[in-house]
Image 1 (cartoon, rainbow, N blue to C red):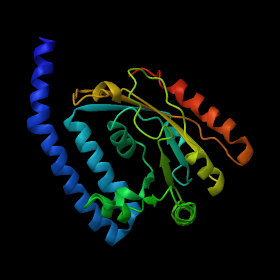
Image 2 (tube, helix red, strand yellow):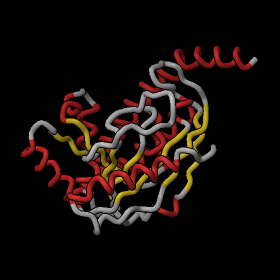
Image 3 (cartoon, helix red, strand yellow):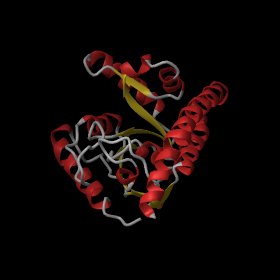
Image 4 (cartoon, rainbow, N blue to C red):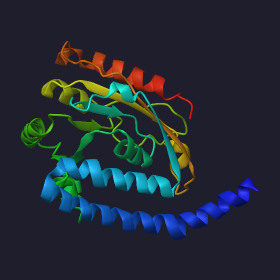
Length: 247
């Protein structure tokens, strides 16, 4: 019986879910552009970004369990650092983290029609990693935007972890160097369960439960560039421990 239900779900995925994903993404991006123009990018992220993420999660359906919400101070800006198992991690973060987040994205993404413009209107930071001067200028833009509870978010693994296990990939230095440069605390986040909803190296999709563990923020004021590796390893170990929380 379970096998039959899983097969029927794949029909639902192709005929209903994926078309609705395209429709609602364009729909909420359009509303977000209007909201951002009228009320600012922060308002768009806290409204249409959340609505989009929760709508698509409900249609999956994906239930989200949050642990450690008390570790978030909405008036504090962070460099948010999370592991990356699936595209559904983005739904979890947008829909349930509860703070205004800005993404640091490759400049090439700015060229994507609608998406690129919406990202810019939403206050996200496009960065040219091949040009140190341009990257520095982008960082100065981030410095102006990341304040009063608005945070930067990074997937330090750089891309989705396509391994068939919970093991974390190596962390890149960008998020941590940014935290030191902007003098911001790091907010580690562990996300589990999304790999089972959207398995790696596959177009399969299944209902399920995701768990987001929000850890206590790491104060970076005592760290210097020569202690960057120490900061990375501390953050990585915290995130790794949180991956085993039960749904």
